Image (cartoon, rainbow, N blue to C red; front, top):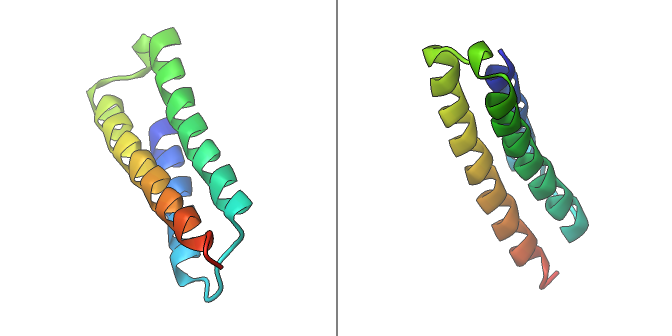
Length: 86
């Protein structure tokens, strides 16, 4: 189940950033934003190309993974914006 794997990895990246005592540079946050947007794109690409592989449960997980991905993009954007002054 690709959406479950994607959501797990995205949540792990978010968690690891929140427990890290020092901030990363802005470029790291921008790379993470690109990774999260790329993961969302890959999920929807797979949905468009292989719709039979996505039953109802997989589509629900896809929606949850999309929410986690968008929340991650917003989180890393705000962290990058806060890192500008440092």
